[in-house]
Length: 254
Length: 202
Image 1 (cartoon, rainbow over the protein chains, first blue to last red):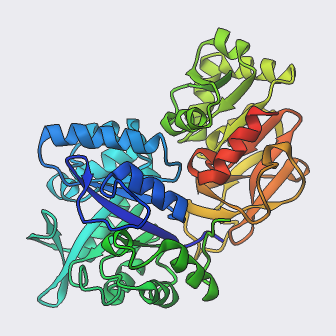
Image 2 (cartoon, rainbow over the protein chains, first blue to last red):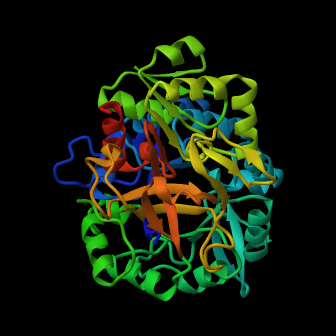
């Protein structure tokens, strides 16, 4: 059976990992290449690199970092942030990305998903959505979760999959940073309307949160988190051993 | 030297990088002279079977690959490159493959429970049906990374490993010097790299 994936997310700006990192035995703590290598050796199933630079110079540095990482780390890499055109897809895919995640770019240009899926295949196109509850409905937010687009999230996601998105990253703004667990209600609503993989993001604070996620929602395929991994609050090795004890299908390193 | 055959299908960055990290000389090429001179061949591929088979035929690479493997030169097909080794595929119509391994490629949807997602994307554990030099560093139950919607059937005689995804799915095949992996060794961490290393030692 395909195992549940554990995915650390690295926010990269000016060539460095932004959310602080605190690891024993890792000297260059904010080097994306070193951190990616560390996670790969710890048993991460996939990595997400998120480009949070705004300048074209920053974009060039990010692309270079991506190349360096892909030369050393041989697990799937998803790249997001600043993906607005198929030229952006082309740039990161040629630099070693396996999947490309679109967020605001798809809101600005809804044709982007379809165009990219046709060129690179559905498996390559990830729709990342920042969602928050507003007035009793799930609402899509843009600009890193700062701007309410007014778009209802479930219909947006359904349309995204119909257009060719091969995977959904659902980031709940309501639970993000709270560390009280994933947003099970929102994840359930999404996983029931799509038949592509769903990655849960936002809210993980401890190992038990991942166990609860996969036990409660078997249709969710992966759990993504950033700072709890970066700060060593959750060690991927420990997490996976706990998952195995709970009989959740998991890939263990030997 | 290993020739990674470039016929305009898929992204070869990781494959090239994984050989580089192993210190094994490998070159991405479509040059027939280099393919003839290479001591091993890799047939990569991502995308649709029909397009890829057409590109191999049009470019003359189909005939060249068959010729080289007849001499006993090791060939490793990866993902769509593995599927192309078979007689035919039923992906959007019927398309002829290289015919190097008997069998055909069909949609997994219909063969697996509806509750399972297609494409099958993620890590799955290898279960070996027979020994293979390609997997000399790999252990029963080691996980490798898959992204696919179609898989090979009617190839039991040449099946080396399967994975469980509602039913047994062909994961690796071998016939003479022709090898195939449905998964991506270049994306399968240290297990995957050990398979590429073993290929360079065949």
